[in-house]
Length: 338
Image (cartoon, rainbow, N blue to C red; front, top):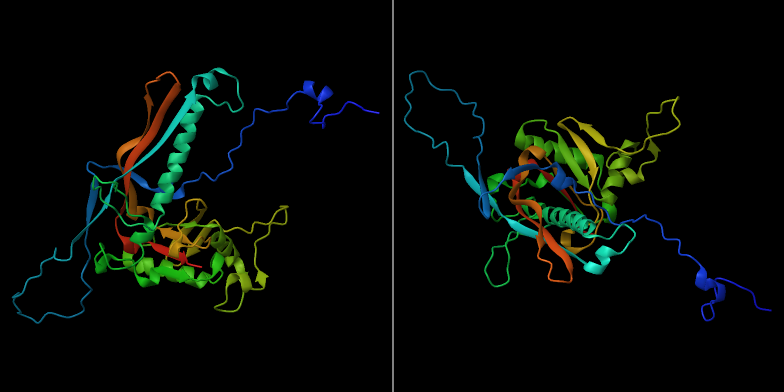
């Protein structure tokens, strides 16, 4: 004997009159945070090549001066100056909604304003991924190669190139591991990078560690006690502060106080963090000093609506900017090349 049901796809019967249960909730399943872009100071640019000068002090001298000695030799105090720079890169995302889609009711909703807002969110992710990238700058040639900014990964690699040796990131500020999820990274290694940065800047600036997921978990385990030189994940006992009146124990580390500076630890966008060595890893991160890097905007982020030719509303969002790394030696990097 047949009966009315909801699952018969060939002869739906009563199922024809069943209503949809479609809520007005729209969920975007993608990480959106842009900590490198958000924490950078913003400045105006006036050309497609943004440049700045750097200088250094001579090493301290403890030699005395003989009584009555005349000054017979003179020092060019500006001989050590150098010019650094980066190319302005243009970013763009387009959007369009048909006239019929604009007219109907939809979940979300899915109108031109929402399309524009989503394009802006995508554009910010594009910028964050480029800032965190390992690419070198490229120059517009009119034959398919567009201007491209130099990413943090290339600025901080310590290699010979466009950065003079005196201003390159020191080897002690670069930690490279071939183990996935940065398992080999230790608290001692983090302190070595912080100390290296201090030897360059000479000040205990507030630093920001933008960490990928694997590195973030390793840093959270720095509250453990273990044998000297062992990775935190191999240590056996975790030390925590527990308030007897509280029902929770905090195991994450958001602020790390070292002898040479305070480090704020933030989660990097996993879709935007760099792939060192061409491999997809989760154990990388940048230890940046916000005082020594910034964003230079030639065209601020904005939206432009284009004429409706009959199919529907359309437009694009864009901006043009570059990354200024005022002193590569003032930052550090953890490279997971597994």
